Image 1: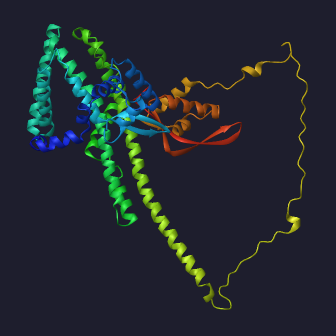
Image 2: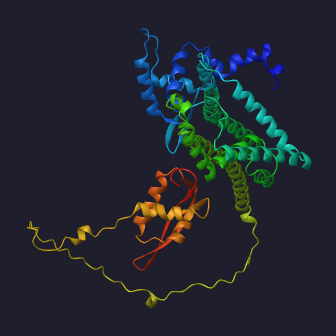
Image 3: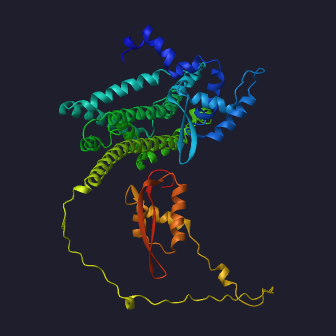
Length: 486
């Protein structure tokens, strides 16, 4: 929406009454809610928090507040339920694997971050932002120019600059610094602010995805034509969420983030930057060492949301299919009822002839009765031993699964491809210890960020044990390269 349409009295009046961020800012207990949201969600960069954990945190937070008598009359549970109500819209309550969680909504985060921005900044960098604007505009102009002469001129200009710098270094043996201490500090703070803003954007990305899902669900509910046409519409837009502009941008970010070379380059660059002398006072307070893992966790939460939303779309389609099935069964029932009513009209005589050969089983072909065998149990009296007789080797002859070997097996397969399923790992490295080793792979997958379980897909794993072929059926497990230890 253009600014001249956005910043009108009527629109702002409606925004003041309906928008959750503005509603938070003008609430009587805005200091309590905003301070709690910042301390629990924004400062530690956390997302979904289990209900009981959040209740305990809010109870302790209210207790520590320097409040007047009776200022906070509600209980922590009442506050959380009120903030999660649609009339407030500051928290989102959802269920995941049988447990209930709370997460901060995008409007609430915007309101809290605006309050944070009110704090006076001692240092405001403008030169680096100006350069960023120029660089972005130059990149757009250069990457969209299809003129071969312009491109060649640009490349030759860059080559001349590089050649001149190489010649200068070879002659003098010195590298002239291009940035002074102020410029280094300015650029680092801008990078830290942008990196943190990316984390904040993920909540709004999730909300946009949910809005797209609601639109698809509305199309399914209002669909009045045939089932085949509906399925064709859904399948033709099978990734309707990911194919949106928001989805394409997010998937490009996700692929770029998980690319191993980009991760190595980011870690190497961060180490080099944090060792810069001009940034030593800032590194401890504005460290970016773990920003990559925080991005992965936040983006992973968006991926889970995408999976849940896709499952909701499938469920809506399935429910519509079940409704059609019920109509078919009702039609069959009416046909059967009419057939019973017309039973008296069946003509006399032979109505239908069928050639059926009865199956005959003679008495002597049946198995004879065999009395069950009685099992005799010998329970001798237990006598305490002195340890001088017998062997204790069986105590130590146990199955031991080497977890490091399992990790090495997975890493060996990931060296050849970006992701690999457990079945593909076992095809290269068959199970040697049976179920114990299979459970070891599952434990390894549950503890690694680079592995996930497909709840809606099953795979059959066949292995040899004591000369017998055994089969295990479990959820499909996929290991990925580029996150966690993989």
